[in-house]
Length: 329
Image (cartoon, rainbow, N blue to C red; front, side, top):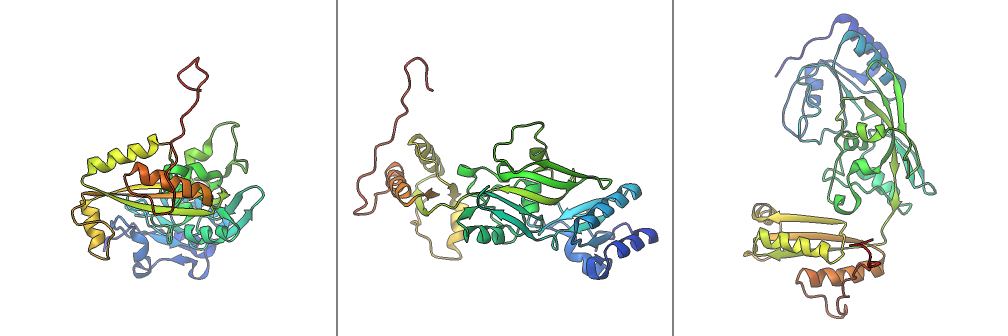
């Protein structure tokens, strides 16, 4: 087990006072789980703290700046790039207890959350009100909103909706030294001043510790449809992906699986594609029932997959009309 730089006695006394009870962890056995993430790298921290209010975070960052102690924010550690690994020791700050959904406003289409809220739990709460937080990373059942924002997580729905950066309206963060800063706001169309919110999203904990995030919400789509199409080769699948966009379709998700991934899936469950397939396109549509039905027929035609009996002929792709004075309006 890698030994981390030990804390000075005064630093330990500060942490014990600021984070009473089990909110501060110092034993190697208890800290071991906080020394790694999905990258499988490992280094033992000097200490672990689990704040449950913003004032604790502010006091910690002020103290750490004075004492020159590294601070490592940590959500659920689902990232695969070593973001949460305390390679030079320091204090790991877990967001596990900063996990409250503070507000869901169906009129403004805004949610305000603490960084430790699990993304999947937020999506469930929003769906009950007919709302959607569009970013949908693969780790959605475990990862946190703060971690998604810190790494600018993507996910399958990025094709249509963009990545996490496109759905964070504002951030409250504590900077090194304990100074609080608020960026952005609640408006979906915020064009005033420097866009510090987008600077913070994706900064991987290097600029400050997120304590509150204001999220952009959308109406929950009424219907979805998923299509899996097999092709003889990766090149053929990529050509079909281009055909989908040229037909005027914008899927919510479009994923390509080559033979290696197909074999891994086939090893654990039955698959719908033939053994001779060289690649598979997975596509997902969403919207109103009528729009999904029409787009499904067009998608089936574009990808050379027959539409289901009774579904009707695929609609003809719409063409863009221009005024004639330029290449396109």
